[in-house]
Each structure stands twice: as C-alpha cells, then as structure tokens.
Image 1 (cartoon, rainbow, N blue to C red):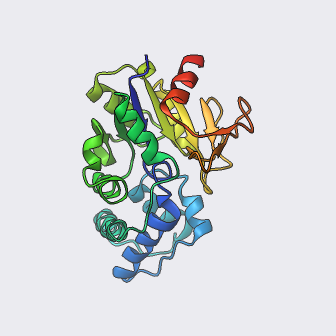
Image 2 (cartoon, rainbow, N blue to C red):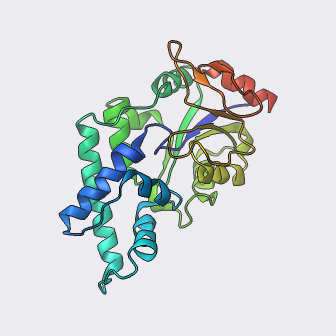
Length: 253
C-alpha cells in the first residue's frame, strides 16, 4: 500500500539550479574576491557532481587546476558554501524562486489523502526550509514528516544513503513509498534504495538516462497546463499528477 511520497528539492520542487543556486554561487565568489564565474552551460556540466561543496572542489580540479589553493582550502570551500546559502535564501525571501507546476497542488492533495510527505535531498537544511517557507507556505516545513538533507549522510546521490536514512526515520519499507526526482543521479539513488520513482525533467536533465523510472514527465502538470509524458511506457500521454493517478501507477508497477 502506498503510504508516503518522498521529494527531491533542487530541480524537482522548484527550478532552483539555473536561476537560484547558480547566481548565488557567483555572488559568493564575488564576495570573496574570486574571479570564478559559472555561466549556464558550465553549471549544467557541474551539476553532474552532487553537492555544492563537492561541486566547487571539482570545478577547481577540472577547470582551474592552476589556481593557487590556500592551505585552508577546505575551510574556504565551507565558507563559500555558507555565503552561497545566505545569498540563495535572500533570493527565496524576495520571492524569486517559485515552485514547479503542480507541486503545491499535489502536496495539498496528498496531505488531505493522508499520505506521509518527506524530503530526501543533498541540499542544505537551510535551503530546504527557506524554499518551503517562502515558496510553499509559512508552515511549509511542518507539512513534511521527515526532511533528510545536507551532510547527515556521508555519501551523496547516486548513493542511496539519504533515502535509506529517511526510510529509517519514517519506519517505512521502500515499497510503501514513491520518490520524485529530476536527475539521473537522483533516480539511481532512489532505485538503489528500492523506491519506485516519478521523474519530472528540467532543461538541465532532459537528456539524462531515466531507465526504470515509473514515469518521466515534463512536470507534474495542472488542469489548465497538463504535463507531457516522455517515457516509452506512456509517451505522449498528458494530464496532471494527482493522488488517484499516483495510486494507479503504483498499483500497476
């Protein structure tokens, strides 16, 4: 029986990557006097690396190998990440990052139907809280029974650790849940945890390999703006994801 819905955050609940995290990283770099600038194509490449601190380390190793690393490089990365989070939460507070189509509607329907809601993400808890508070509802954080976020597990997606941590806290089995992801790494993490997954793509992830997903959609859809289904199992299907449709997909998997 379907009991819970577990959501990734960045790219899934909201299109945070291109117009949220990327400019926030750039603002942090400028604040620290660095000449690093992540444009849209570069950031798309960097998204293959999960986790903001890991992304910065990868950028230096791959794109700036001649940049003189200070002895306290790890401390600098941590400070940059805190500054980036501060810039990002400011953008959220200003209403600059709305939820993706269908997200709020589905969350409201799921709560009314008695389904448990959870978050499983590699972004920091502060980022999650800010997004939920400013883009969902003032008490948005309280809609979720568990928020598994940030560095609470050492291995980031595509490792399943963040999902396993959430399942343990909820006391649920993998086959009692559905996950929502936007990327191949996210899908692999949920699959490795044994959780069936619905994918909503974005501009950065549209070409990823989503083999094995329960459904691959342009978004969750709204009655006035339906999704388009992209996977071979229902290619061309349109509609909007509601609890009834989720239960049907879950039962037919």
